[in-house]
Length: 552
Image 1 (cartoon, rainbow, N blue to C red):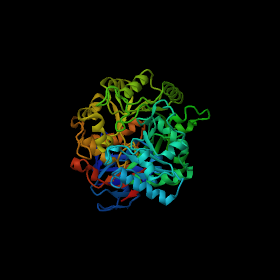
Image 2 (image 1 turned 180 degrees about the vertical axis):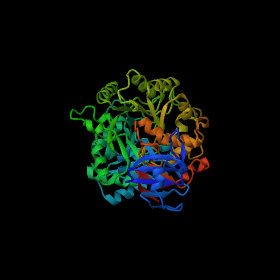
Image 3 (image 1 turned 90 degrees about the horizontal axis):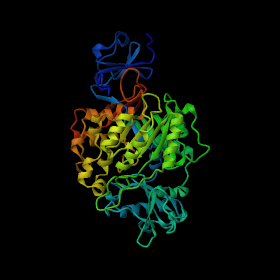
Image 4 (image 1 turned 120 degrees about the horizontal axis):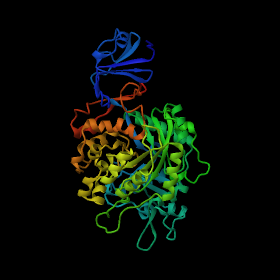
């Protein structure tokens, strides 16, 4: 047999995510693809003959005609598949003020950091920040234009909330964007106003886009450099496949990824286009060859935003938020936008993704999708619903019947528990994110981070989300529905094969014959570690297509 490009891995504790063959101690990669996985004693004879001369203590070396790596008894898992994140945004944010602990714990801390940035870069240059959650600040309120004016009045200041659905701006930013007391609320958005009718500086949902024209431009070369830096972080976190769910502007991320991949960016990427920014562009076109999912960088489909966030109190619910009679959140997506997205995806046989956290938003998307037959090739869910915080039983059942996938983020209640408790109360919080129930009903469910859209300083790290799914306990000790906890093996499956299936990545997320040889070697055995210590686990090595891309 042809031996070129054969790499044998032995003496591991391999979790394959393959339900037909979940555990193994050895595997073989051939030209970047898994050729065999199982127990070493059962390894096919040609591979055993090809590795003559290797010793049990060998780390990595030539044995006969094969390269052999001793995994030294470590737990090995498939490479993580983050099925919903915003990497280009996250990469850009690395240069902004991170408005979160431990550096910033109050509006006073924030003001001081803004003053430092203003002093360093001078007047007139926009100051940007990201990640604030008012419940994580000492004052328990969002920073408004008056706070930001006191920190800096001679340069625009724009902060993006952790959920990425709300922005806070100072007076200069509002003035430059043409926002005043006479500016009407845009459809699906709200300009928050004080008792006199003046804008407070808080812009919710579609109103946040009013600031886009004054944001400082970045060149494609800048974005590629930023992305290359982020890629190294993803490598170190064991993340080998990602879905980019779009930007809050009309940037086409596809060429950015292609350029980064040409310079060593390791991750396999499915690119989704935020339809709000492309629907009315007559020149918008995705070449047919970009839809080829055998490419390392491919166009996966479109993304719509159906509502807001729980932590921002804008998720569109079917019951009022506690303490109110008429506050249900915000429905963001117009019928025209939804219908044009459905038409585009049907014509191009690509996926439609809909952000839907609240029950009304989830129901709306599921109902609309179920009026269609699947328009994607077999094995690729034609519709994905993102977040799915508070689904109804009817929506779950219809999604199962129609083959709609759900992609959810256990990091949200883990990192944002204070906001969830304030906005929902303990009983409602315990009903949210019913992972176990959705799996029992047969939902095609996957996990992800939605980085950077969460209140966590390392938002792309998979391990806090895994811990949250297993313990159903937030970072601050808040319990959020322990009856919906899943086992560590299930949580891992949801972050690897489950995520890949939900995103329609047919040959990744599992260590089985014919799949990409993407995997991570862990510092501790996640299947035996105390659940409360899962977030302490680190990735020692990451392999993509049989090549080691990270070594701690």
